[in-house]
Image (cartoon, rainbow, N blue to C red; front, side, top):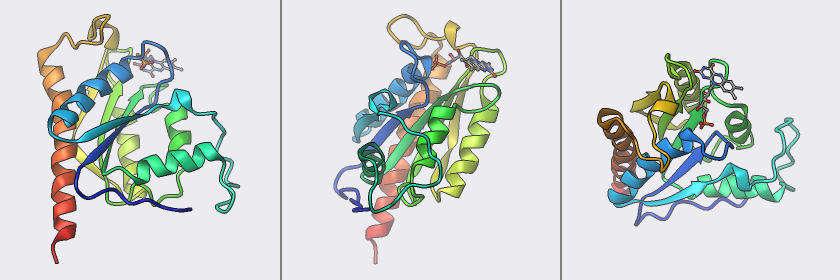
Length: 195
Ligand SMILES: Cc1cc2nc3c(=O)[nH]c(=O)nc-3n(C[C@H](O)[C@H](O)[C@H](O)COP(=O)(O)O)c2cc1C
């Protein structure tokens, strides 16, 4: 694959939402974190999985003839310094669509990148197990999952119809995820420029 390295002069942060549902609360939560990343000076982009013609990872991808959507997915992530992953809690874990997207990577795209983690659940227990699973995947992909994370229980109570968070403490924690991804990505890039 032709890999494109991140431009060093400006931090780029991608938002990747593991829910395809119109009106997704996960997307709303990610938007809060991504907005803060932008305010912290990063260029932010959505990696919108609803725009992809999906295929399942069946373990037979030919690196010399990648389907265009896989090539695009890999390049988008390769070009970023950081990623904020948002997932709905599905049956005690992260969503299949997010796992499949991560399985379509060749494993190098997230190496050394900062990752913020957010989960959204319908139930009162929140999505901690989804976050723990994603943290393990980050380790496997050699990414730096930042310590700050947010699991939102009973998401239907938390957002208004415009996607605004109705709970100030929660909003601050989402903002902190966005802020820290930029802050640590910046430190990481600076450290790599030192000789
Ligand atoms: C297949 C499926 C499984 C779910 N499993 C759980 C679960 O284990 N725990 C929970 O609290 N909510 C569960 N929910 C509810 C979702 O977490 C909730 O609807 C959430 O808002 C979905 O995210 P979204 O709004 O971004 O689409 C499940 C929903 C679906 C569709």
